[in-house]
Amino acid sequence: MLAALFEKDFDRYFAQAGCTAPLWLFVHVPKTAGSSMIAEASAILQPRFDIDIDHTDASRTYQARFDAAVQDFVGAQPGRGYRFAAGHIVARHVETIRAAVPDLRCFTMLRAPVARLVSDYHYQRSSTNTAQAQFVATTPSLEAYVARPHVHNKIALSLCPRPLVLAGDVEGCVAHIMKTYAFVGLQEAYPLSLRVLTILMGEQRRPQARVRVNRETVDRALPADMEVRLRELNAVDIGIFQVFLAKWRGIRDDLIEHLRG
Image (tube, rainbow, N blue to C red):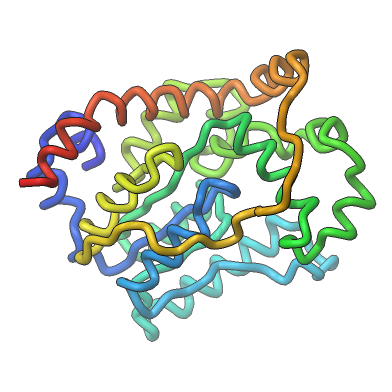
C-alpha cells in the first residue's frame, strides 16, 4: 500500500492504509523524532503497549531481552486489544507480531544517517539519558562510539532482515520496507509526515509534542575525514534514506495540494 502514496494515488493510499487497522506498530529507530511521534500517536490510539526491556538486566543479551518483550506483547494482545505498540525492535520482531496480527500496520521514521548517528551519540552523553554516567565512562569520544559495529547501519538493521543489510543490498532493503510498512516518514519533513500518519489513524494532528530533545549545547561539526568514514560505515542506511528522500521530494507539493482539498 505504500507504493500508492509514492505513485501519487493519494485517495487509494488513504483508503487502503487507513484507521480500520486493529494495531499500529511503530518501529522506533533512535533519534528520528520517534518519541515525539509516539506521543502524538498515543493521543489518538489507546490502549498502547511499550515494547521495552529492563536495561539493568545483565542475565541475557540485549536482543534476547527484546525477543522476550515481543513475546510478552504477543501474548497480551488478544485479551487487551492494544491499538498501538512501539519499541526499538527489529525486522524479526515485526514478523513475529505480524504472524499474530495479520492486519498489522507498521510505520517508522527515517533521518539523514550521519546526522542521526551523531545525534544518538550526543544524546547518550547528555543528562537526558538515565545511563549517562555509564556511557561516558565507557565511550570517551565519538571515535570510540563509531568503532562499535552495532551502531553502523542502525536504520537498516532496525527495518530489514539482517542478511540483506550485511550483503549491502540497498535495493533489497528498500523493497522489503515498501512491502512491509504502511507509512515511512522523514524527520526532515516531520510536520507533513505527522499530518499524513495521523490522517491514517483517524485524527489529523499538527506537531505539538517535543519529547527527548537534547537541548544541551554541543559542538556537532564533524571533521571531513570523520564525515567520510561515517558515510562509508553507514552506506546501506544512506542508500535507503536517499531513496525515500527522493520519493518524498517527488510527492511533496502534490500531497500538500491534495490535503488542502
